Length: 73
Length: 198
Image (cartoon, rainbow over all chains, first blue to last red; front, side):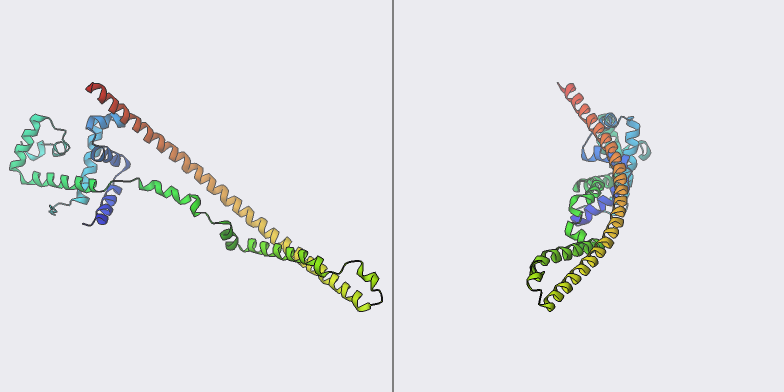
């Protein structure tokens, strides 16, 4: 994939998330916080944070790395 | 250990304890499905990290920036009543500026009382000037009423826009406050972390 295509795909995938899910992805993937730290930041139980992140990552995975496609470089 | 009992995502995010880690890795050696799943997770993360997310929706607000507002001459050009008013004003100005040069001085008729054609010409000139003045006044009045109507419409539109902007502003304030609160929590967490390390 070209950089532009990749960025469009990522933008589209992130667009399918809710605000809360994007927040979780931001804190975990981009900021690298631990589950407990995320829970402290968002004032939420760890279980809620985990479930938001897991749902989000499932959606992103289906969009960016669909099953059956091996894109290993 | 089987596929359902391991939390592959927790392992992927590096939040699994050392003991469980070993168990997960053992399972991964024997399970192709879970290896594939882990690969997909890594691919997803790599895609996400290849592009840094920016807050796209906020850019929409910039459309209302000054840059996009029409210049005064664009507004003038785009509005027929205004253009009419401006040209009427210019015409009136030209006529008034012109008058002292071409209208004979009032003292001249007594000097040339004998010359009838000259007096006649003066009267004609005065008549023409007064008719032009009347026409200009009429045009001015018309364009002024049109202008007033247009202004009233503009004011109403501006009020509506202000109201909408006000609402959008309130929403933005609320959102910013939320973001600030979360940032504060980030700092709080980071400082607590520092405290533990010391």
